[in-house]
Image (cartoon, rainbow, N blue to C red):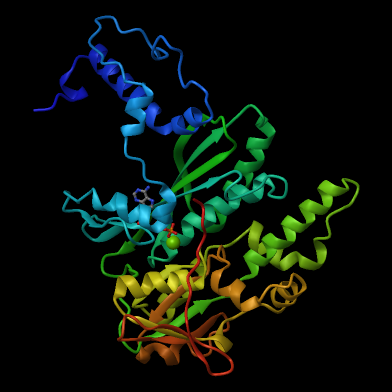
Length: 410
Ligand code: ADP
Ligand code: MG
């Protein structure tokens, strides 16, 4: 039987954990790049001791070039974000009876008897998800809560608590952190959620803001990505593409500012699209309205990566096809005009832009009447039985395959 830290005394357990974390460090650091650059990873004499073993029982990791080159190394980009998640998921099975749904939906679903608990977490990393040159910290705080609450909405649940973990450096002042928490507080008020904990750590590589959310739904009322059925009608809330177009505006204004710091950013006439990027709102309002109208979606997901990518998720999870109509895709007029100004196709922005945090859901034909005249819900197509069919019917009547780009981080 393998010895675990639980079987050891505190001192030995600490040493074992530290030895393990040292081994992990070896794999995480870009040692290959250092070697190819001709730089020694470590001094000749061996490893940098993180602590001094007292009884010599802790094995030293091996650092020779030979050992490194024999280690299999698969580039993450060969899997992509979704492939990597599937790869991770393959290595785990659920052992708890209460774990109704694990990896693979907007939130995990946990059985509590009468209700289900909904759990989700989303992290924002400086330089990947936001640029502090144009993202005010208060907005960042608000957005981080919104994108988490949005995942609870996507399960047809109500958010109740959040945990906030931050990685910060001394580049940030207390006032800056206060500003971020001001945004978090505003979002907590808007969504009626309580901040009940978190974690604070130093970060050597920019600001990290990671939020976990806990929500609830009556058992049986939670909605999965997997429930769409043949002939169901596909609906989206609000309008799409504006957040991506807002990002283009902000990036352009940043370039202008860098070229000439005396120039003031021209954001007034792009207020809507910039607001959609900087301060998205989770559509909890729609969740409440659907309940009042007596509509239980058959499947649902929030639009974080772009309409096309989310349709692919519904199609895959539900094992059905999707057929949507270009002329039904809701695009705000200002967003449309700004896209054209940027020489972007507004429909491509709506299909692949992402970060809209609107809801994409399917309903039974019998519920169409109840939502037909809803000012903020648009029916954009329907589900088909053929899981291979994922198509867009263009304005000209052509049927073209949908392409899901999503975000490429790796
Ligand atoms: P969303 O866009 O709705 O936040 P993601 O695409 O981030 O969803 O995640 C899809 C699913 O994969 C979720 O169930 C999420 O909990 C799970 N997941 C994402 N990253 C990891 C990870 N590193 N380890 C385990 N599960 C993960
Ligand atoms: Mg989601």
